[in-house]
Length: 246
Image: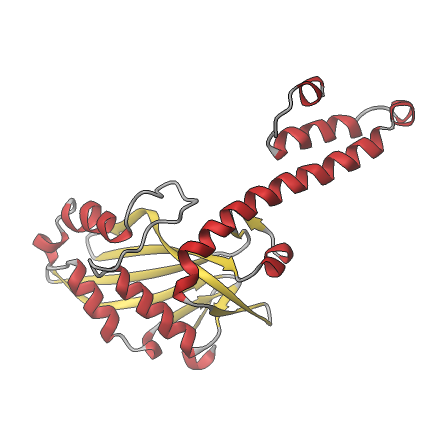
């Protein structure tokens, strides 16, 4: 508490919440004498404001970066919602086994306006509780890759219409095009890297996929373009679905 009073600087919300916990753990008599309950309530509101300001700053960057790709419709436990999205490769970028090659992309859901931002549980500008991934899988058959399998995996958010699914497929295929400038999330740990360059360098070249399996960025893009939306699989809450079942 001494340091919070003494220094004229904004602290992280965790510092305030630690102080709140200490205030609430004091004796009943101390709470009455020092008015700790009111102080804790005031500090809780300030901590919430600190979190919102941080999230708002991150959200505005995400909106600036990804709103140009349009809105996507999702179904969240029966409630229809619209979000902008950011498609980010998983930290490992790809898994390469003896019989398959898997690319995993995390999908961030970005509230479309300030009103919706205030209604959501937010972390770094995107929906905190959203757990959506795109999984691209190639089976390795006789030393070469087979047909591309496309799965959207989520336990709570489901793409809810054909237009959004087509837009997602088009956006993902564009990421595998060298002239398409799609950067990592401006709030992410790899914010200075281009998605295409990272996959091309760290997966296709460094792991020699083109040499060993004839798989390069151009082939992945071509396979995504040729893929029918009706062939995309949804793993939603552990249940496998297709577009006609969504």
